[in-house]
Image 1 (cartoon, rainbow, N blue to C red):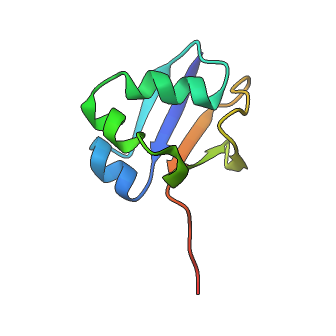
Image 2 (cartoon, helix red, strand yellow; image 1 turned 120 degrees about the vertical axis):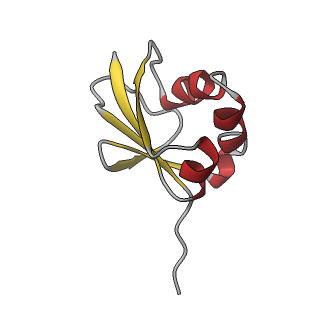
Length: 83
């Protein structure tokens, strides 16, 4: 299956582009992260500390064990803070 992967804030800066289309056999977000991290050193560095990364599937917050089935878009971004 193909998914659009979006990167925001410092993740975009470390990876070097805001989005990419990925062909994957991953069944969960965690498996997709492993595939992305194996692509090159930039992806590996950006995704090395998953406690500092949030994910959304089709613009809905999800956790790393969420299934990818039916998702068209996966977004990775740092946690938000407010004040």
